[in-house]
Length: 252
Ligand code: NAD
Image 1 (tube, helix red, strand yellow):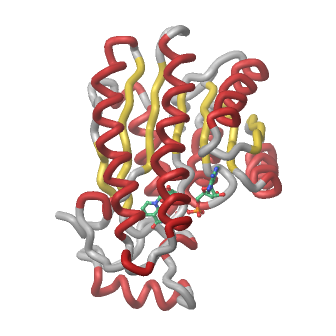
Image 2: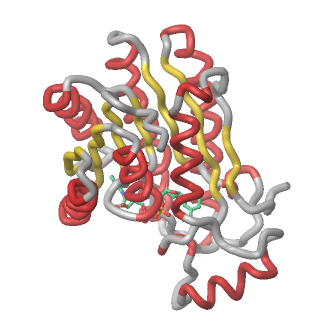
């Protein structure tokens, strides 16, 4: 088995569920000490327990990524407890659907605050540490809906994610000279609760995606995690400012 992240400290936001939890487990299996951050402390503790059950090292820091104070504390705590911060997966996100003319302004604000401002704040504090300490690697979670809006009523979410892709490219160019390598992933539907429509079961989703996507199924958590680990690994050393689309051909 390859162990690509021995002696690395990896931070994962949204690490209490879905893609974040799966990626945290994958980093830990490959030797990293993983710090999971998110709003739900119980969910974070569960991720830590899953990693420790497998013999890995993990820690939880409850954090609201839309708060600069929280994110600054998260980076400080990570470095103080674990001696560094080498990899960051800025993945926390929220989705609230609705026709734009009817969308509550608070729903607009929440999506921009978590999906876009959250990524900005994480990068701001992570980069400050990394560039002063020999560099690092950052992967942000955007969405294929940012560039290819196949579905109605997701305008606010899609706009926030398109901005994550743009911000990733801008930051990548600004900081690669300081040894901070930054990329993004743009998933299509992955098998988490976020890709379920209201009232839909997993079986309903499987049925819907048979025709809706060229590949005919949702992406797996393992497929999402593997893409993040590759981008974070030295094998992707020449990959800078890239937005890796994982969508079974939806936007091909
Ligand atoms: P998820 O709902 O399981 O994960 C989102 C995580 O973000 C949760 O753990 C939640 O607690 C956390 N979070 C929400 N607001 C937060 C805040 N203010 N501060 C800290 N943490 C917060 O769903 P997921 O599918 O694993 O989503 C992970 C990321 O992938 C999100 O950014 C999402 O937009 C993106 N994405 C998902 C899909 C999909 O089909 N599942 C597709 C494209 C993009």
